[in-house]
Image 1 (cartoon, rainbow, N blue to C red):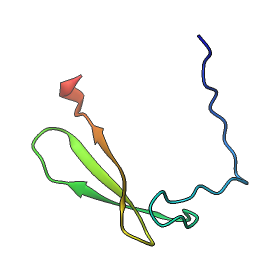
Image 2 (image 1 turned 180 degrees about the vertical axis):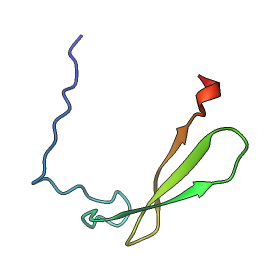
Image 3 (image 1 turned 90 degrees about the vertical axis):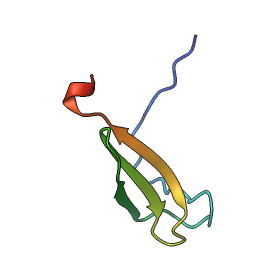
Image 4 (image 1 turned 30 degrees about the vertical axis):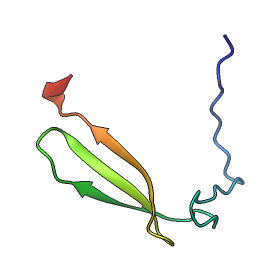
Length: 61
């Protein structure tokens, strides 16, 4: 099986999948919940959601 390589590219400009403008800034907010910390990331220009992350607490493994 071929592995996908991850490389840092400073000259590349990712585009927002919603408004198609270059992503120069990403905003985030913490979501309220009882298990771990969750964050929602969104485009600073169109405010549409780019993704949600979840950080488990140390006691959750």
